[in-house]
Image (cartoon, rainbow, N blue to C red):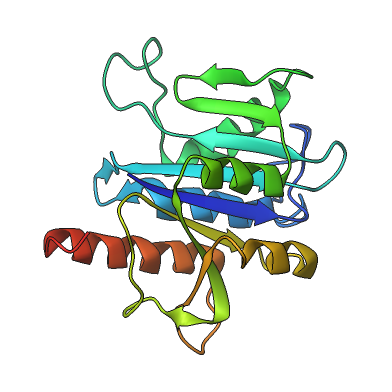
Length: 204
C-alpha cells in the first residue's frame, strides 16, 4: 500500500466554495488534480493507494481528509462511484459533512476530521511507516532506498512551511525528482510510476 500526504496552505476548510472557479477557491483545483493523479489509471482506479489531504485555508483550519476508495460492492450502498468529473463535488460534500470533535466517515473509505499536518505525519511515524518528503535537496528518487508501504509527503504551489519542513526532515527521508519544479499532481504521477516500476521488478 502506497500512501501520500498533500498539504495545502490555502485550500478551503468548508464546503461553501464555488466549483465554477476552483482556482479562486483556495487553489483547491491543485488538490483535485492530486486526487486524480493518485487514484486514476486508464479505465480503472488504483486498488493500492491512500491519500491524506490536509487543508489549512479559511474559514476553519485545519481539516484532514482521508481517501481510500472502496472498489468492491454496490455503488451507492457499499461504495461511492469516483470519476474525474465528480471529484470537486465529492470534496465539497465531504467538507460540508464535517462535524466538530468527530472523525466522520462521509462515504465508504472517505473520512474527515480536524487534525493538523504535523499530527497527521506524526501518527504515521508512530505506526512505523517509511516516510519520504519531497525536497529539492533530497536524494534522487531513482536511487533512494524506498521501503515497503512508503508514505510520500508534498506541498501545494507554495510548498511546505519552513518550520514544519525542518521538523519533518528529522523523521523523513528527503527525495527529489530532479532540478525542474513540477506541479504537485505531476509529482504524484512520477512517484506512482517509480513505485509501479519497482514493484514490477520485485524491488519493493
